[in-house]
Image (cartoon, helix red, strand yellow):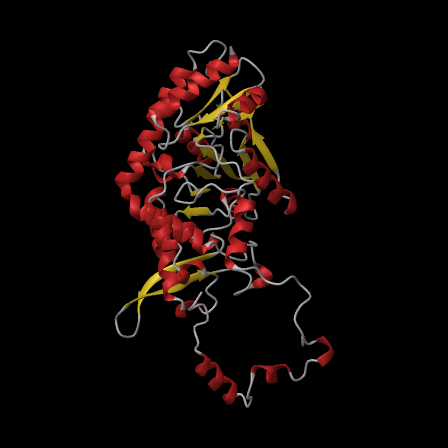
Length: 438
């Protein structure tokens, strides 16, 4: 972190002199000496570089890394171009944080601006914020931004990710907002039940595309139903799928949200990830967090500013409608570098590979006695099958072969295939499943 502190020792000394001090310790002259640290802390001595490396290797050895991964359910094992890590590991980026003196932080602001632009291009929406904590938070924040004095009911598809459902439910509970689940029929949101739940108090409807079971929803009908009742439509989307599927904007959704982890962020034990949010232009001022805009300085040069910064630590704290107190600048920049490296054609190719490989795997897997698709609807790269035995037992058996299976869901298994899996790898998984289930 050679350049972490932007000022030189000489500059810091000059600042001290301008304040009438000769040394850093002079700044603490009013602090009682009894609370000042005058001797080394009572902690073990530091380790050498070799000892630190050995200690880190010992800890890392506790991790189990599977060469073959067939689990998704919100976190996906996609290929990440080498340039992503090369760019984001640079020290001037790895310390990115909240731009308190925003216009002095042109580099951070530009990275956020580029990220916002790409999210808008990906979702088809008009405006994006600078990201939030994760996909579940984005979904809940989107539901809250739809509330007004006349409408406050929130409807959520029961086919959405369970953790997203619980996060929205928690937000609603905290603000005493009516919450209800839209039942599922044949693995998809029940349109008839939605029509019965909608009323003139409903603020928004949240659906996920593809949904938690991998099924492709009839999103157009669901969005139209929400709008027909005067409610806003929120779509939670899997970003890679947008390389093939219609965008939220094409369906007429008001807000698009999702988990940005598939956009160049590696799998890790709980994150950090980021939630992306994009909306129609009319909802710009309702978006939580901040929005970076492009302008020109007094010399006509391209410059960036915080166009909207309606967060508690900046302005109108007592009227804040959100508790987004930080940003995910490094994760957002990672997503921007990934999207830039892949480009529209690269993302489309990744989506097509996911789709075709998943359908090949499903076809081969269902040739095994006792395994069949639970739902007949169209799917992208995730699907649910029956299991001839306890899915937990199947999971453990495949782990012994170096395979992370699909996610056990009740008596079934939710499988996921990404572009990283080769035909040979998928064939080996099929043989392994046949071996442990017969």
